[in-house]
Length: 374
Image 1: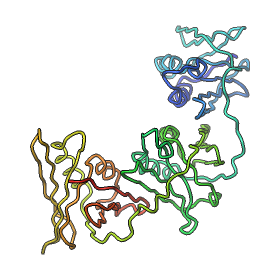
Image 2: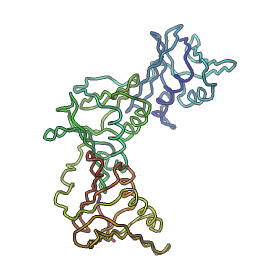
Image 3: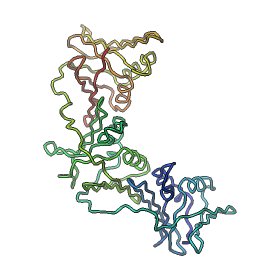
Image 4: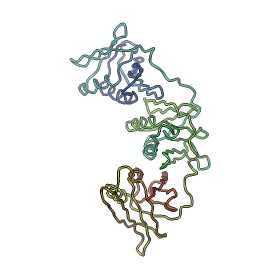
């Protein structure tokens, strides 16, 4: 293989793919990225056996061929090369070493055989549809914080993507058992009838990074075992989590009749201040709510045996009976920090039942939060 390529294009591709590569690998080839030069292009591939990322960039290919190079080392080298430079890549005759040249700089890196590099089988993607990239960004931002990190409940370690035929929507849901986030968008052409699939956390996070550098649409292919995201010249393919997502709709309350509306920014800032005093372990903040002639009043408070106490009052819209309910402050902030509108709405039943939260400026998103004992 012998080719020349723009440093910025190579760096962008390596930046994308090297994040798939784990820092510690027991299988040496998985620490490498696959470089294939052909047809005026360089194809850069990384995999961890569950996730595969392929990016194609233009290059001046003098001799076609391929090799594998250490991912993080190659990225660091190219990152430190001068901006606007051209980078030359050339493999030795035996393929055991690659030379990287740029100006007066020269690097020789060890290679591993391309035959050892695992390639994820394409398979048949029975369903294919497209979503605008800004919708994909919002879908991930509204749900990823609620993905469980508890490995024993592996079926919660991702985002559940499915359709609701009755509402004609494509739906993404994440939950860790304490909170739930759901995002709905109009069902795109081709999405009808897709199987409900659980997209792993790592694939979700990698897709979010790629979406920052993309525009237009994301083409999504779904099979029963894999999902593929194509963003221009970047293709991300991931195995799906083989498990059954719980029937989450059963925990979404429909009869909560104590409705409070509050300014989202002021509420978030007040919770953050009050939570400063709460213990790191519980992070409990109590909400005491009561109605009055001038609307409603919310009193936020926290107590710690070691640090003392804190309280703050907010004006809210509320005309129901008095109620006291406690929440994990971190969970409250995770939700309120992702709101767009000026007002958020809480629908409560009692101190022990799940609470529904909505951003009044974003009807596509719904949150459910379990209260804590106070």
